[in-house]
Image 1 (cartoon, rainbow, N blue to C red):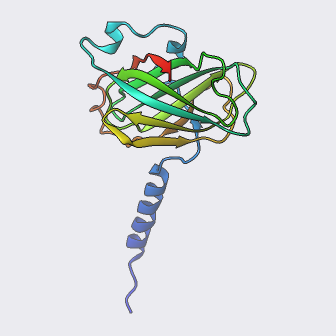
Image 2: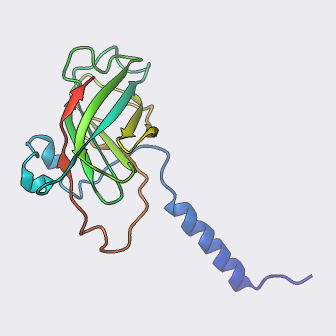
Length: 191
């Protein structure tokens, strides 16, 4: 019986390691502020110059389930950002301004407007305050595919003042994403 040459075995091993390192994380991770998202949390980003002239607004339904291990209620400011591989980003500052939002074991639903995307592949939450809060999961229903939501599972308390979440987007070729529309602020309303 013939054995494979050592170079072939080494190539196979390196290929497997490369695929394993490219797999998306199943645990939420902090987000690097490489696109200025943190700076936008305090200012208004709804100007036409930031959204693009004539940009169409799509309305997403977002459900957020608060964990049963979370504090009974939170007064913390909860912000949300999600988008697609082309960096069409929907941003909502201070979700749940009404009393009763983000209560323990509850599911809150919001309508959030923003640029029309092509499949949600990343989602980050940010908590600012002293109470603490633990999301269980977040579901984003896209207007073009309402029967197939993108679900992001958390289960751990959010750190304070850190964008924390998931990036499941495949990597694009070098400069193809630079010509796509950039982010825009979304309007959010509780349902």
